[in-house]
Image (cartoon, rainbow, N blue to C red):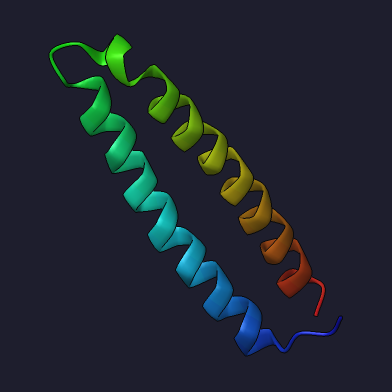
Length: 66
């Protein structure tokens, strides 16, 4: 599939926004009184962060090659 540079830039902007929210979520859950209670939510958020970081890197690489 072909995407325009503008599409990729907007996708990165949305990914960055989502990453910010996910990192805040992890920070909030870890600061709770009993963070072990939220282990599965923290793990899920951390996995999503990793996935979005990979996507962000790949989009950046693609836009650099345009």
